[in-house]
Length: 190
Image 1 (cartoon, one colour):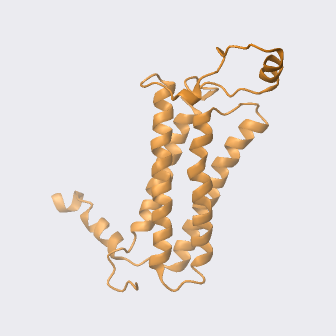
Image 2 (cartoon, rainbow, N blue to C red):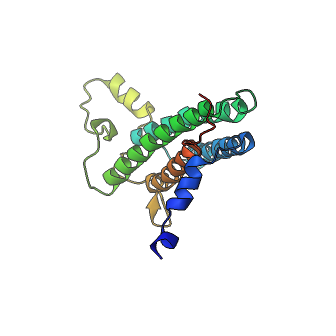
């Protein structure tokens, strides 16, 4: 009975079954599309919705920007590389980048909910002492990003940083799934 409920045979099959090039290519392009759509959504909130991102929001975008070229290289590389280990290495890099994104998103969400304090770069800078009229005009002309501790908007009771936790977790698990498929295959070429 315990063997039926166990996921060991499924995991064993996953780790020993070599992925096809078409499967790797489809996963790479699917993940690249999902990451691009996530970044596109964030940019549309910024430019069309008028929601200015805080400093942590901008930092959280870097893993997405970095992972997209890896995924495109993996997607196109399946047609040129005969060794699937290189493609899986690219997916492993995406897994690491999405794990970093997950940590950053959890940190940002914790700052918004008051679990820990925001970094000094996230303050509103409203208490700066102005000693010159030119400084006053420069301060008025500059656009100040919002504080990281206040969510600019919430959708279904979650802030955008909270939604980034969910999407980063999903992308982390998907990239781990693809990177680990067939890793113990006996027909693996190095």
